[in-house]
Image (tube, rainbow, N blue to C red; front, side):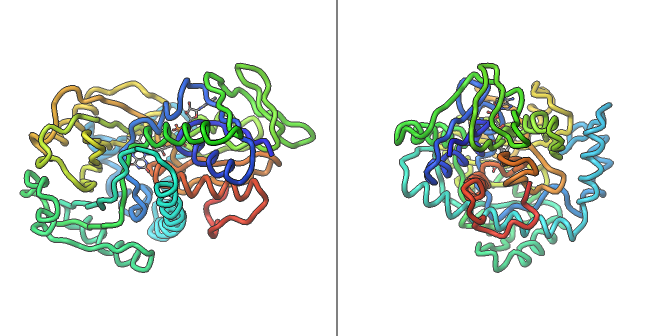
Length: 415
Ligand SMILES: Cc1cc2nc3c(=O)[nH]c(=O)nc-3n(C[C@H](O)[C@H](O)[C@H](O)COP(=O)(O)OP(=O)(O)OC[C@H]3O[C@@H](n4cnc5c(N)ncnc54)[C@H](O)[C@@H]3O)c2cc1C
């Protein structure tokens, strides 16, 4: 089959990789001039297979006033005259129950486990240099309630295949001495030795090189904006683009936050809303003062990953619409927290600031597989976990396009 993959971010490239291995011919279409130009550009770099609990959780209502009123909290909601924002917000609040949160976590753990297996196979089979690190992850806590909840979550996840350990503050410092500056507020942490990290953009560039070099079944159409899905007798047969019509036997939407606009005219109302986040990528200046393993500061919702000589610092979730302008106050908040966490560990300039839009669903579960319109498939809504979940999502979509059953139980993950 000839399959059009719309979007050359990490989800589109992983889908293309799986489709080509399944024997299909693939054209990857993107409006940008190279891969990973939007949300996949400089994300947190975490391959976070065991930390998949969604943002929509039972603790959210308690935090709502802070999200609405505080300018310097890790999450910020700014109401706009946008019915979609309100509707998405209501659906998000509806999902903030312990039952829904546990359900979504179980679904995401299934998808993450598949993704981990496929990522490890990819790392073994293909020569992609993306600073892949298998150093584990430490989520540090400074609030008693949150630490208690994290230990409960750890018990809940026992049996999911990943070993996790609750550590007290001294054990955290023994494991990661670079956390010394946090000693005063450190209560403890959850350590998952099996977690990975890597540079998402370098991964995408490597994957694109493999796709183009190893066979002639892949074509990239860069600088091509997709404007409309085309149908014949009810079936999607291609797309209208800024460079003309492109036909295909199947079309997979992997356009991140851009997917909603494209699908709407076909009566498909995708519940996607952009959660804007920021990152910094300073150079590590003092190896011993920068973290070796991936660190998540749970209270501040900031992740730190060592990617080669770079310290990737990422965080913040702002519900401010499809806005990719830099808010300097938010960037400086991230920089201040990073400096307080790892003083002297990284060069103050350049900080290489970046922001991107996480394509989020209200529950946190992605939308994968066929739509009600024949020939049209979804691979969207991975939200804060797109790098982590891309390999599994891509394989599932390829299996479903090929007419095979999905490799995992798809309950709650369908489009
Ligand atoms: C600050 C931040 C930190 C993050 N940290 C992590 C992390 O540590 N771990 C993790 O797993 N995930 C993380 N994420 C999430 C992850 O980055 C995203 O989920 C993922 O990149 C989404 O990939 P995507 O391919 O769906 O979307 P994108 O990468 O946005 O790709 C979509 C592509 O579609 C193209 N496109 C859109 N509209 C059109 C159109 N009309 N025509 C043609 N092309 C179009 C765009 O140009 C783009 O290239 C983070 C995100 C942010 C913002």
